Image (cartoon, rainbow, N blue to C red; front, side):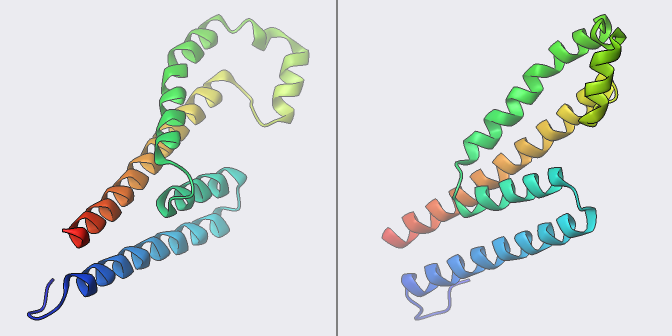
Length: 140
């Protein structure tokens, strides 16, 4: 919103402040989520989202990770159908120690993380676009 007599610089500064408030609110909500869920995965995803939105990490990296997880889905489905590894008691022992109890759990986790990383990349790109638009608006 532009007030009559207000300069473009003041409007740009106000928009940047609003954007920073939005990022601060998102980070606060994610921090509350991490504290309530108390998991390393939630902390990693929330940290990746905060870093992507603040510009510390290129959002395209999150998109690439999400696409990698999506591309690995057919391979994991085929591996589940073969499932010769699950017949080994030694493999079951080590897999249970790291929290993987079946190939189905791995597939479900990979799909969820693919979605999360794609959303993180999309939000990071959105923030990057809004900052670029503000800079180009202020320079014009």
